[in-house]
Amino acid sequence: MLRKSADPESRLVWRVVDGEALIVDLASGRFFSLDRVGTEVWTGLKNGLDLAQIVDAIATTYGVDEQTVRRDVNDLLEELSREGLVD
Image (cartoon, rainbow, N blue to C red; front, top):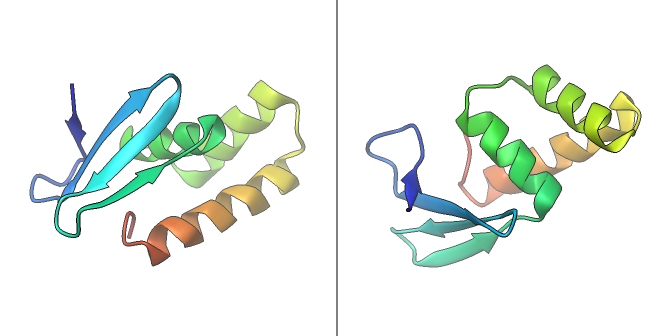
C-alpha cells in the first residue's frame, strides 16, 4: 500500500519496505530511500511528531545522546528540504 503525505495535493508517495522508507516524487520521477533511522524521522514527521519528540525517541531507542541525535536529525531535515521532500 502506498501512502501519500498528509498534504492531499502532495506529489509524494511513500512506503516502508523492510524498515526503510521508499519515496517517489511523482512530479519529477525521482526516487529516494531512507535508512532505518531516517525512516523513523520520516514517519515521525508524517505522524505529526515535533523535532523534540523525534529526537527523544531515537535517542532512547539507540542509546545515543540527544545532542548528537538532534544534530543528525537536523542534517537529515536540511537534506530532505533541499530535495523538496519537506517544507
